[in-house]
Structure formats: C-alpha cells, structure tokens
Image (tube, rainbow over all chains, first blue to last red; front, side, top):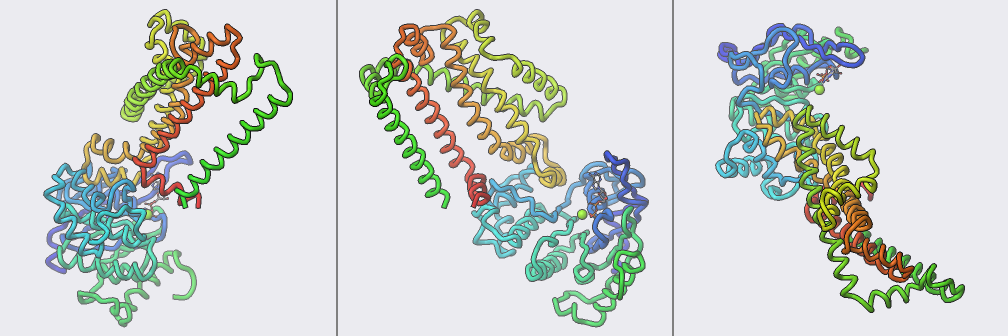
Length: 264
Length: 259
Ligand SMILES: Nc1ncnc2c1ncn2[C@@H]1O[C@H](COP(=O)(O)OP(=O)(O)O)[C@@H](O)[C@H]1O
Ligand SMILES: [Mg+2]
C-alpha cells in the first residue's frame, strides 16, 4: 500500500459544491479533501444525501466544483477525463439494444470500432456469466444480470479508473455478495483505481483498501480508515474478528456523527 | 397474452360493428325514412359495388395526398423537433410558429393555399402538413428530451459527440413518441386532404362527397364516408403494425404494464 500512495491518481483539494435550486442554494459538499492512489480501491461511505454521488460526478467531470479543485492524473478536471468507466445504481441499459450492443455502446460513444472490441465485449460477458445472453434484450434479464452487463460496459474500453455509484444497492443480498467478489477479482487482476460509493459498512470494509467516511450534508470526509485485511478476501473474511473490529469502529463513528442512534 | 388479447379485441370490435349495421338496416326497413335522409347500409353497399372504379380513383387520389402530407409532416416534423432540442433559439422560433398556426383554424387557411398553389394536389398536401405536423413536432421533441439523465451522464463519461448522443440515445428514445405522434398525424393528414378537396379541385373523396351533396345524393355521400372510414382505419392499423415491428421492446413493456 505504501508504494501506491506515491502516485496519486485522483486528487481532490478543498472541493465544495453548491447547487442552485428553487428553494435556495443547496450545499452538497463542503471542502472535501481526498487523494486516491493509483490502483487503490477507495470506498466512499456516508448516509444518503451526504454528497457521495456529487463527489463522484466531480471526479468524472460531469459537474464542476463550486470551490476547490479536482485533479485526475495530475490534470485539473474541466470535462470528463479519458479512461474512466462508470457504473450507476440503475444499470442504464438501453432497452432497444441487445446485451452485446449495450456493452459495445461504450466503444461507439468513444468513437472506437465495434469490430475491434466485439471480441473483448463477448469475453467480458462470458466472464460475467452472460455468454448465453449476448443476443437478449435487457428486459429479458434479471436485475443482477443487468448490472453485470453494465459493469462489462464500463470495463469495455479498459478504463484505468472505475467510478461506481452504489452499483449493488438495488440488488438482493445473494446477488450482491456474488458481485462483490467479482468486483474484488476485477480490482486484483487489473489493478484499476476504483472509487466505490456505498452506504453499506460491510460492503465498504470487505472491498476497499481505504474507506472514506463522509459526514451528513453538507458532506465532507471526516475520517479515512485503511483496511488492512489480506487479499483475496473471501466472503468468510466477514466472519473474522479483524473485519468485525473495522465495522464496529465505523459504526461508532456514525453514532458520533449522529447518523446511527442507539447501541453500537 | 398480448397477441390473443389483441385478436379478441379486434374480433369484439367487428362484432359490435356488425350488430350496429344490422340494427341500422332493420331500423331503416321498419321506419322507412326518406332515403334522402338516411339510406340503408345495403343501399350504400350497392352504390359502392355499382361504381367501384369511380370510388377507387377518388380514394386513390385522397390516399396519395394524405400519404404525401403525412410523409412530409414526419420528415419536417422530426427535423424541427431535433432543431428545438439542439438550439434554444430554434426552440423558441418553432414553438411560436406552432402556437400561431395552431390557433388559426386550418380550414380558414385553405382558400389561401388554393390561391398560392392552385387546385391540384399541392394545396391539399400543404393543408395536410399544416394539420399533421404539430403532433409530430410536439411528441418527438418530448421524446428527444425525456432521456434518462444517467444515460446522458454515461455518454459524457465516454466523451460521446453530440451526434452520437442524438443518434444512439435521444432518437431511439423518441421512437415510441414518434409513433404516438404519427398515429395522430395520419388522421389529421386525412382531414387536411379532405378539407383541401372541399375547397377546390375535381378529385378525391372530399370532392365526391361535395358533388353528391349538391345533387342531394345521400347514398353517395354515405358511400364516400364509408370509403373514408376504411381508409383512415387501414392507415391507423398499418401504423400499429409498424410500431409492433419496429419497437418490440416498447410494445412488450406496454403489455407487461397492462397485465
Ligand atoms: N442536480 C442537483 N440539483 C440540486 N440539488 C442536488 C442535485 N444533485 C444533488 N443535489 C442535492 O445535493 C445533496 C447531495 O446529493 P447526492 O450527491 O446525490 O447525495 P448521495 O449520493 O450521498 O445520496 C442532496 O441534498 C441533494 O438533494
Ligand atoms: Mg447517491
């Protein structure tokens, strides 16, 4: 982990975000500082409405910060930087395209040839257990399969940064576990930089090298917890005392922040 | 369920229609109103059978102008809708233009079109376009706009060009709305064509009805109306069929929602 910290991939310096709205300005982020190293898996953890999605959108260049700055690979972010894959809570598959064509949409958007990437798209889908469904349409697939396809789409153009906004939030627990393991494997293989938004403490600790805990709105990063559990982390890691200690620590932090009331 | 449901729907409509016709026939036989007021369905049918080429010729003319007006409305309407989504200035221009033309009764404009374009097919097509284009522009513009914001975010993350967003996201997204608009537009195009034929010219079902009315030939008026009704229904049905072929994802979802 020490060598990772040497090359920052994403740097957020005092970034704030204020949305204008009919009911007056909304302060979504308040002076957020965060550095994500190359190849690091960082989980953004915080209560609903604390600005996690907003922070992700700042990194993706979808939204300019109101104050402060965001850098990706050293360059200030003004518009979406190259080499980013994004996964949303909803799969955002296009109903009129087959699963294969949905995955290839990323290539089409980037102006790359479909033919060149068709094999890779098939290989990705195969790997995610969707090999038999390449010619189906999204509405014929289950929620878990759809989200798998969305992940394939995000990975198609070999992004060095993967931004994921509560990607498994809408899935059932079993599917979620399955995809958590899959994601951990993707991270191990490609050493991609991953920023993963979640409001599940267990998911954050299981997957991340580092968990950035955010305060309620306006969001800021209040604590960063390095998760020093050995990889690969099978599901059984969740039963270990070390895992439980991380979870307990974060839950206590949430209680102090007034996010969770009651017994820790 | 959908195919069988639709089949029995159509069957039900036919049964109701047949029952109405029988009731009409019986009522005319019973009360014997003067034929100049209300002829029997059998008389109307006989009228059609007597001169099929006469009715066919005029129906073909009306069909031609209707289709031409409809096709022009779709092409121009889609282009205008794209313009309104692409540029705020175009949006304001087109919206104003549509509001103005929409607030004018198109029938009142028909004589002007005759002065400008003569008494052939052109003024009929122009009136058909005037009537039909509005629903195309409004529906398609709405379809182009109502895109999932996450899909647009996805496109931006992959640095897609505006053209790619238009062709790969916005336009397919607007296809269901285009079909809604087209189904309305095809009926309006037919109305426009008939209005044009009422005002001037010597061809088309509108002309047939007008001439028959001048001669108090009520049977022929009804015969013209029947052909018109069949024409409108067939055009609408063809569009429904096309919709099912072009938008299987949308149609299947719709039946899902109904079920
Ligand atoms: N486009 C927007 N316009 C106005 N307010 C917004 C917008 N997006 C988010 N917000 C507000 O900013 C705050 C943070 O939102 P978000 O980043 O979505 O939080 P989270 O993802 O943690 O749930 C919320 O109060 C939300 O209502
Ligand atoms: Mg969110």
